[in-house]
Amino acid sequence: MSQPKNLFKSNQPQTKAANIQQLTKQVQYWQMLTKIIQPLLPQPEQWQVVCYQHGVLTITGENQAMISQLGYLQKQYVAQLSQREELKDLQKIQVRLRTKNIQKKSINKDHPVSAETQQMLQSAAQFVNDPKLSQAIRNLASVIK
Image (cartoon, rainbow, N blue to C red; front, side, top):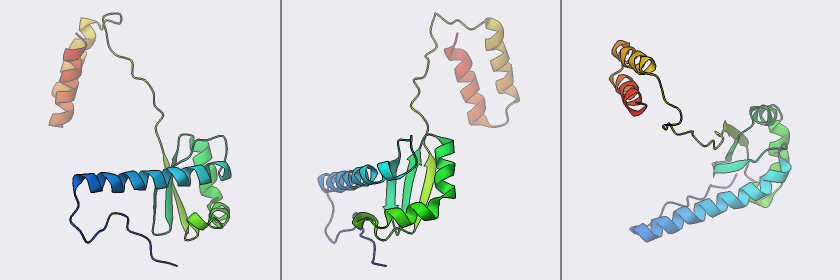
């Protein structure tokens, strides 16, 4: 197996512009790999490469069933993908669930929350032992007034 390329290591001090160029290069590489793997992996799914390092390809998908299918058939997909020059060192595929981009509904005057609900949130905040969570609940109660 050949040694992986470290795209982030350099013998020269890095400037912000050089760092941005390196990151841009890495993202472009991942986008190129995404285009290669997309038609070869289970469909219908929008697979996305998030890392390829030391023979491990890390990808994400939004469909748990497709992710499970890829996990069960990983050996076959590794064999198929490693035939590509860009993925010749591929040994393993890690798959992670990517959350769907859902627009959050904002709380506004059209959906008022009752004073009783606000009071219940304030009371619940008092019983929570975690200070950060307790404060978050109090903040929620104050926002929805």
